[in-house]
Length: 379
Image 1 (cartoon, rainbow, N blue to C red):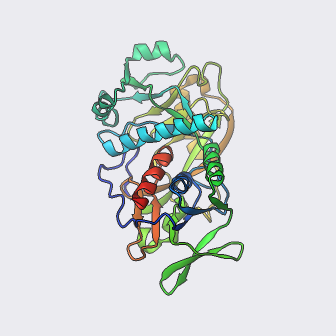
Image 2 (cartoon, rainbow, N blue to C red):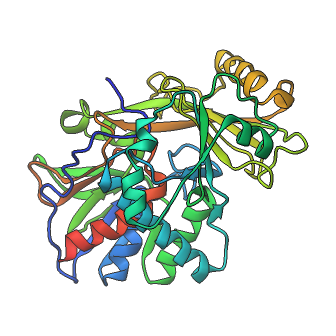
Image 3 (cartoon, rainbow, N blue to C red):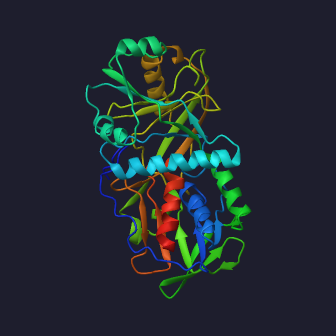
């Protein structure tokens, strides 16, 4: 499967076959990740009865929404849909950060390392930035050397600093979302849920505690498990890939106070990093890894990828050439065939909805997508 990296194709057919619910409806949301938890919260805000289920727990290490941090950036080339969705999501992140009095969005910008004169992902986004009164700063190699002396600029053409970007606290923020959901009267059930069929239609959920749950609508937002749960419908549209991130000790002068989150727009590997992550200097690659079965495969680190990352650090961040590895994590990407999110009803069962296809860029959009889903299904 050919996968767009960092930017999906422009067409997104969201909302196909989404039902319109009464305010008395009971919705079961299966999966308490970024998509499921935020959607459950906004449905509850609309007054619906909502049960949120996740047998692995909230913010668990197996999910795509786990780990500590995620970059927030609105640059999607000329794709206005995701640009606007990200800006709305940021508004909501900041609003809930203030309401909950806990840090969710860490400002400081994102630095793009650009090996070519033109980077369409950035340059094509600039007209959209201008319409919203936002501006990015072009940095010559000399300016980069002065501002960020820890970066070796060899092989780069220039840099671009997006001051409106930053990074998000990941698993901790999802825990806050679910806590708010419960405070508002939503029910969180820490159970695995399987579709319960009567004939060929889903009429209830079979829970891991042996009970059954019946609802008016079943919304499946199970991340890397979604394609596996519905292979005949989504199997050729979703794949789960094995992505890895590594955390290293932070050398002096390399923390977030000296260096923002960064992205290397090489068009091939797409190294990225968050210097201020709580567990150290986080580095990963957005290049899609091998297919991962989220249930069966062990999640051990790849020695070959670690060597590749160390080689990159030795070139781009020389002081980190021998930095001690703090820890490592496997992050499963739930990739759609075109990079777009999947937000649609089951083609044959009007009481079933699919929400997924985060494709490595979905987490930051969680609040805006959840708000959109709730609006679509209650209008």
